[in-house]
Length: 317
Image (tube, rainbow, N blue to C red; front, side, top):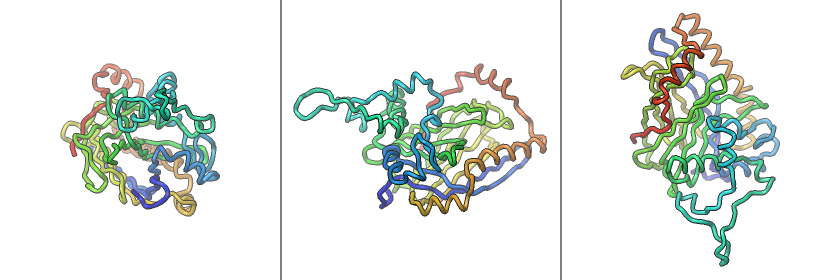
């Protein structure tokens, strides 16, 4: 971990896309992204009260509602209920007990604490549902809203055990229609940051992301646990043939006022840039006469192939 007051950090990053089939289309762009220790959200908001807001408007804003949108509101309410187990952090059964009384002690938070987010509790509940140990730590790689606007093509939750080894990754893939699909990647063995090992996993896409790639393809995830360097990618395959290669690489920076101001100056309106680039390159693909898949027809096929909408896939290290 970084030798600063926070485990959370920024990454100065570069995004690379290359379409390999029908028509070759390639681009690179620079930006920055956030790697957040979910247990530090409250501290980050208090440390940078003007620049960072947790569920309240600031220059950069983290909003619960941008995450776990694949869940219903009722599921979110159940998952955000106060937790009773201290040992949940290690994924073990048990109840927190007050000093010497033998009575369970609730972990209910104050109204002030509630505004600092429920996503960590949602992650805990999600892992319990999948019969996995609750993470000791969770890092979220994501874009924060900038001046109120944000869009994340994909966010990644990195789940670490008590020895700070990565054992699972949850990817939230979003499309421009406000829909979201989770992909849970379970590692065949836990890995530490120092091991610098690459992780590979393959999952059916069966989700409408780009109108220029059929939903009946597979995602190939390839990534490392973020450290000094960020290195991850999601490729799209048809059988053994790559259709699209997408990579995300970057260099770690501390979350400091100077870094945030520098990032604002270097990459103005960064979240707006993301959505503009998506539509700009979609237009270019359309003009290149790349086959187009309509959403309504595709959604019918997605529902028909419901068996391909599996959330869980296993990774090799």
